[in-house]
Amino acid sequence: MDNLVIVDLGSNSVRMTINEVHPDKTFHELVRYKEDSRLSEGMGPEKRLQETAVSRTIEALKSFKTRYEKLPNLTVKAITTAAVRQASNQQEFLDRVKREVGLTFDVLSGDDEAFYDYLGVMNRLRVEDALMIDIGGASMEMVNIRDGKESNLISIPFGAVNLSEQFHLNNQIKAADFFDANVFLRRRLKDIWWLSEARTKPFILLGGANRSLARMSRRQQQILHVEAIHGYQLSTNEVFQLYTNLLRKNLAQRRQISGLEPDRADIIVGGIMPLVLLLQMLDSDRVIFSESGVHEGIIHAYLEG
Image (cartoon, rainbow, N blue to C red; front, side, top):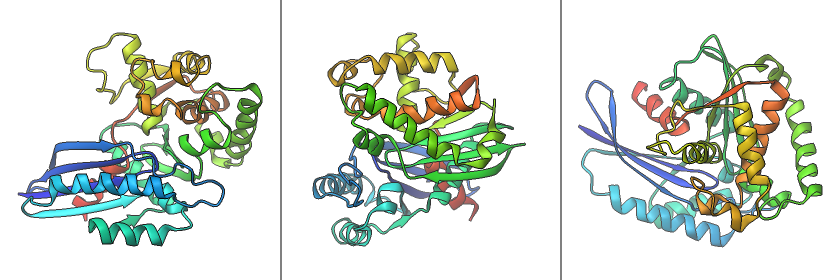
């Protein structure tokens, strides 16, 4: 029996799973850990990882290492996505992580991230036609699924953290900032020619902001097992109602919303905004949440390799 550890360093959080791999190439997830390290915080237009965020992230990685370093038959795969991919000081960061933690990260391209998202989704949700959307901290991946296959994919360099910082969506939302953010997003999204092929398709949602949306809904409806969101569905109108409720509140009030992690309250409006615009643009009637994404896609690719 082998132990496969996946370390997934995102723009807003770092996640780790320890997986038991069987001889028949099946696997069983033993444990999962997550730390909200917010690596992309304060990168600004110069796209430079900041010391506070870097130190916070390295401490999380060190903590994770104590949980897996003594496991037998160990393989560790470490991947990182948008924040490091975009960083002007990328190599400096990777060298420091290698030196202080002993991890060598594979920096995924945007297309690779979208494809691994697709692999992770398709191994857990059987869908024929849908638009898959993963909204992270510093990027957004979309895959058009047609007849059960990946038809088109894209990664766009904006997400919950950088949108919230750029357009001042962290606390009380001002009308001018909200308008500017919407104009910016509409212009970027309209440039994606193949999105029209996804018109009226259901959306499959991944990413931290989207998971928060599902948890808020389940709390409101007093559903047991709030975290069990895989396959959970919401109508477009239900998404709009949840979003409107977020817009009406300031940061302190959002932190009190049941189902929303307090540490995510300052970026949730920016994180949900692209979803809301796409629902309007493509006239989709519902969303379906997936617990599986790039993390699970990496595992499946490893086992198949």
